View 1 (cartoon, rainbow, N blue to C red):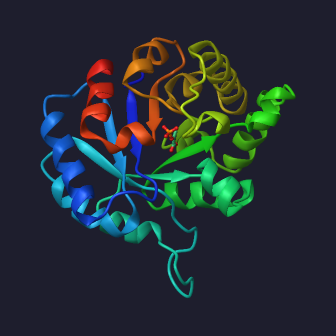
View 2: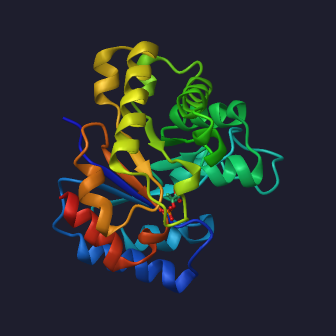
Length: 251
Ligand code: PEP
C-alpha cells in the first residue's frame, strides 16, 4: 500500500514573514494528519526559517533544486550537504520550469537525482509533456525518455528513494487540470515502464504524484485513481486553507 504524498512547491514566492506564517499555519492545521506524507518546498533563502516553524510538526521540507557537486567553486549553487544541514528531506529534480525556462537537460537532472540519493535526500523527479507534444500524440514517448534518462544508472535499491511527479506542462499554473482519466493513463504507463526498468515489486512501491493546477476541488477525483499516489502542488500550496483542505480530503 502506497502512502499518499502531497508536496507544495512554493516556487519563487513568499518572503521571510509570509513563508514562516504559511509553514506555521500548516503545522497547526495539519497536526492531526498522520495518514498522508506532507512536504513543502520553500525558496532556498527561507529554508531555515521554515524548518524552525515546522520543527515540532509532521510536515517535511524539500528544496526546489540542488547542484550535483559536493562543494567548491560553483557560484550560486547549493549542495546536498547544505540542504541536509538545514533539515531538508526532499529535493525536486527536473521541474518543468527548470527544464523549459532555465534549460536543464535530462543528463543534468540525472546527475542531480543520483547525487541527491547518494547524499541522503529523497528526490522528486518531475516529468511531463508540452502541449504540442500531447497534441502530436507524443506524451508516452516524451515521458518515457525523461524517465529513462532521469533514472539512468540508478539501481533497484536506490530507486526506492525516488518519487516520480507527472506534471503535464500545459496544466502547470494554467488552471487547466488534466482530467483524472488523462492523469491515470500516464501514471499507469509510468508504472508499467518502471516495472520493465526494475521489476513489478519496485514499480508497485514507487509513488507517482500528479501535478498541474491541482486544487481542493479536484483532489478527491484525482486521488481516487489507482495510480495517482499524491500531488505536487504549486498555486494552491501557497495558502494554508487550500493546501490543508487538499490534505484533509486525502486523509
Ligand atoms: C508545480 O509547481 O509543480 C505545479 C504543479 O504548479 P500548479 O499547481 O500551480 O499548476
